[in-house]
Amino acid sequence: MSIAVGSDQVRLLRVEDAARLLNIGRAAVYDLIRSRRLRTVKIGASRRVPREAIDEVIALLIEESTQ
Image (tube, rainbow, N blue to C red):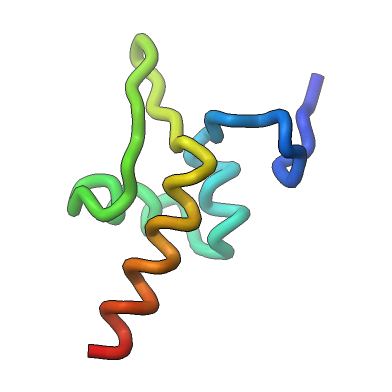
């Protein structure tokens, strides 16, 4: 069963879904995670990105690009 990434019901996104929303590759998402610019939670062996962290990282990237 697949849940649409745009669905408001999805609160925790897989890295692949976060990459799709940000229009970047998976490796770039992992770089953001490693640099602690993108918040995640760990559930077992999986990383999930809280939906609100997407907006936070976009704001951070905009701020960084204007400095």
